[in-house]
Image (cartoon, rainbow, N blue to C red):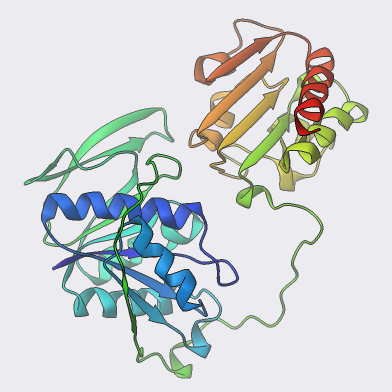
Length: 322
């Protein structure tokens, strides 16, 4: 038996998201008294794979295959299922991001497993297996019992701390049965945005709302973001007005993000916006209205004019950097 955790990599490197998953998996495995097996798909150096052991993986199953260079949900489901059955995995863990949301339901059906999505903490019990998860787009929580033999779980980002381990993970190469005939999706070309930090990858995000009053006032947002190595974002009314690109729109109908720090400047905090940033580790709100809903969700709040506060923040960041 084992806890199997799917660890994504980006150009052969793991990010905090994957280490968070392995840390969580290790604690679940402790409750079940079973080992943690991490699965990595793609070209990843052994030194990088070993890092998964630093957060609790006992074994890393590494799979490289020319047909797995592009995410194909059906094919990835087949591969992860193969490894799950080989390792007799009773718990399969993925991130609650776009990839995890696509793979987890397929795995649940294929393995006849119960599914718990958007988990925010460790299972309160393992017999019966009871999980704590978000419901109603993060507006409420529920305790759910999973009664099947196999459980598929997705963990909300930034909901579990990184825990270092002294595990010296063994690396095992695995040859999958995937063939060219299994591939149903063909990628003919890929266009990547360059020269700008992707919003979904950013650890820090500086976001503006209608309180910025005009698209001509976005200079301080961009300057602060550049100083912090952050991405820029906006609320839906801003993108609807054409002040900023829809690519920057965060919220329930925009991009769902989970940065370590989210700075909301001139954003009132509509529930749809908060649903898209609820997994941010820290939320800093700046607004002239002390009763704005954003302050109820914020870890730190500044009541004041963004056009005065932002230049002061920029000045402080520059001073500290120098």
